[in-house]
Image 1 (cartoon, helix red, strand yellow):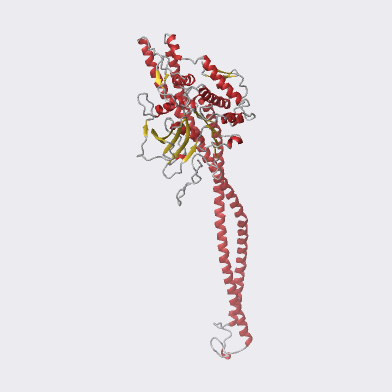
Image 2 (cartoon, one colour):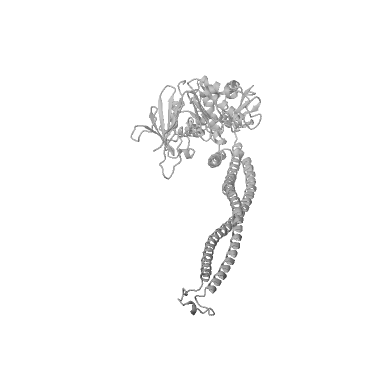
Amino acid sequence: MSLAGIRLRHLSMHGAGRIPAVLEFGPGLNVLYGSSDTGKSFVVEVIDFMLGGKPPIPDIPERDGYTQILLAIETLDQKKFTLLRSVDGGGFRVFEGLITEPPGPDVEANELGEQHSEKTSDNLSTFLLGLCGLSAKRVRKNKYGVTNSLSFRNLARLVIVNETEIFQKRSPLSEGNPVTDTPNFATFKLLLTGSDDSSIVQVGPRGQEDQSREQQLDLLDKLIDEQQARLAELTKFPEELAEQYEKIQKSIEVHQSELSSTEEAFRTAANRRRELRKRWEEGRDRRADIASLLERFALLDRHYVSDVGRLKGIEEGGTLFEVLGKASCPLCGAAPEHHQKDSACDGDVSATVAAAKAEISKVQVLRRELAKTVDDLQREGASFDRRLPKLEKELQEISNNVESFLSPKLAKLRATYGQFADKRGQVREAMAIYQTIQDMERRRVDVEGATHGPKEAAVAEGDLPAAIAEKFALQVESILKDWHFPGADRVFFDPKARDLIISGRPRGARGKGLRAITHAAFTVGLLQYCKTNQTPHPSFIVLDSPLLAYREPEGNEDDLRGTDLNQQFYNYLAKIPDDRQVIIVENSDPPDVIQKRKQVTMFSANPHTGRYGFFPLRPPITETTEPEITNAPKP
């Protein structure tokens, strides 16, 4: 019996064109810690999936392209196997040895079904139970002494505790579904005592009324299971739905107010931007017209200057002709005596000179008027030169505010508001389902309570023997004291609540962080008790976020950051024997001495330091380059 049990050796995911994501484990303490959103909790979910959990596994972007999963396991008597399963679920292929790459379909392997069956041995549950020394065991199903064949899934919830379950207020033996509470407790009792429920004699309903009542109970059980499955798809915390709805409603109101004010600010800024752009464009166009006019007027002025020069030449030439005296007319060739001074002709030099002077005066007037116009245009242009940069700066500032702040903020607020609205609808649906479940459970209690014959019910309850419950509680108490848990003076097991009473307070009545660490103590205590007393146990446990009080305390009483519990927690687990395996998944850093151990892995979320996460970091795909895979994790 002492050699029965398994330990995990490595978990890996594979896909075409993808570097394998590999994580190795060993005997004793294993720690996986580091930044959020690096795949730590995903690892826990995949381990559970590879031990028979139902699909789907979390659909995170990083797993895109990975199609197969390998989980290597080793028995305590050194037998080695590797389980292969598709990420989409379905059956398993089992290979002998520790396989690091998925073998081809032609490689010989045992095919195992995903569903437990006591009639055949070709399923994963029966295979794993055989390795754990728990073959052909039976556990109680209901008060009539009906028993079911033990499934490995009955064990899985006692050894794999995810981050959602670890801080629940209910007992570690409860899933929140009364239908499963009886087999869960029966499995717990089997591990502590080593004895199953196969010797129980089934007591059926005594009469037609009891048979009818039993049928009602079966129907209610099925309906509750269906509703529980629907509820599980919507939320993991049904007890907190009302509080969650209230928080969402308040968030929606806050977002509605902020959304309205942001939309108003966006409209005001957009209108101002539109006005400024119009003024700037009109000013820019007018400034361009002024520049064009000034160029044309400069050319016109040059023409005026040229005309004045030409006219002055005529004036000077005419004056010169008059100074030279009498001579033959240069125009008509007439002799001086034939000149007719009293008649005008084309050769009248004096008239030509006078006309030139008059034209010069006219052109000069036009130049003065042109100069005045140019001066006015230059002053107008200078005014635009002063105003346009200011308008452009203000326009740029408003545009930047709209594009870089208001528009993204508005889009984010609208998206967030939509998400809150969707979440509110989802919570409403979950609340309706939860209420339906509660109604059916009350109906079930009423129907069950109407059953006559208390002796029959007592036969089916099967409480844990007081001596064993006391030994288990003392085991947990010893662990809590070794961890320096505050107030661990006395620990009892409450048979009614099927949970621990610690220093006079129910375990579930404490803060979230303390519930997490005491749930961990419960799970570790069960492992230690079974190994010490040589009762069956899978020999490994996986705990996700047991030290929540170091990260998210709910209040002063729940805050353990000022204690050395973190140090003592790891010191205790570091000494655990190699015939058992503990896998801790945490966000907070373990003590330095623990970080140096071989089976400790940190996910840094930093592509330049250590291992990035469970999956190798891949650069974004661009249109011009083929995607490459970089920064492969170290095994």
